[in-house]
Length: 430
Ligand code: PLP
Image 1 (cartoon, rainbow, N blue to C red):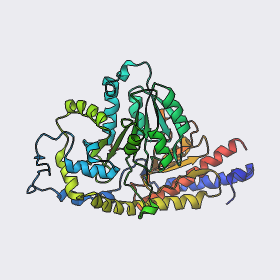
Image 2: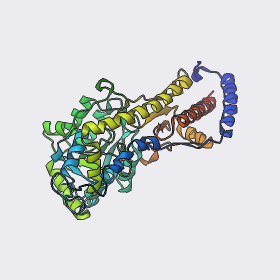
Image 3: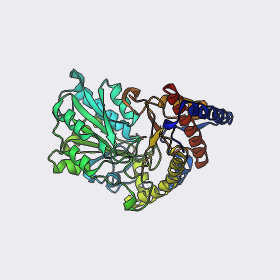
Image 4: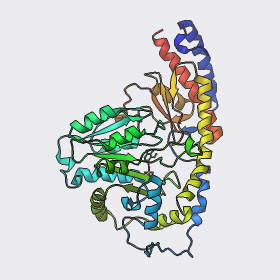
């Protein structure tokens, strides 16, 4: 296929006319498709339904610790739930506090208590002039919303397939005491599906922050979300808590995880893992916040999965479902766009997203065009702090929710809109 960038004005104009016709036809189909959020499809949730039978009115709701799960108590989680969550992130059960249904909620609480009470005895952030967070971009929009909500200044850090630009991270963290945190999705990142290299993880662990209350927010949301079977086809990252300990910085990181995309989003189990000192700090305010989280749900998860192997068997079924959708999108993108030089995209081995980079200045228009033809994408800019993509080029594709058929229809519309908007952009300077 001839590259759009090599086309002269006449060729681009002719191309535009054809694409406009195809766009009108696509619009006439009256599609209503949603590729905006990383939600599991109903079929994937159906696979987990037997969990609802793991506990019945006849079940003994007694934890292995002897605790009656129907009652108050055990505010930092059942021992068997700690073991399961620890296995997911390769941590030790004693490093884990099991909380409620959402890891984002734990992250919000962690920022919130840092604002009001300070981290482990440091000055509360609300009493300081300026608080900054580093934000690898593109990244997870809800992370950025949390820091924006608290008025924390966000600084973009470019991502590569190895992870965030560590020269920049070291420069900021080791020299600027106003930098108090960094958002990380270290494995199958949202939205690129990148996993941090060993060197990146080691450099994180070796940071020597100018601020004693700087912490790494290690959101391991996609720790077990492989698309392919067999260890050689999966990404593996180093254990951040272990690396921090080895580097002599045991308190440097908070690690977050949940079963939102293992069992049921919004009705799973979430956890935070960290050093003893950090956990004591978290528990001190958590015990004021709640008398305890939902232990019956924790027990339901443990009884259903039994152990880490049981959980991974389920994840393999999820992976099989997701893989076909990812591959369908990637195949269609390649067929329609390879050689045109109007976009690049990631090819992840796990996670929930594909990250697409259009020609600069085109992302907003592509998303708007897709919407006009009935396909909803994540808002352009959402993958950047303040919703501002400086290049206006990144678009997050979430293949998880639609059926394979819908996914293929939606991708067809997407590539059409990418072509049309790119031609229009190129014509501006032709
Ligand atoms: N972290 C990341 C990177 C996510 O992509 C998501 C959901 O999409 C979450 C956290 C939300 O997790 P939870 O449901 O545990 O709050």
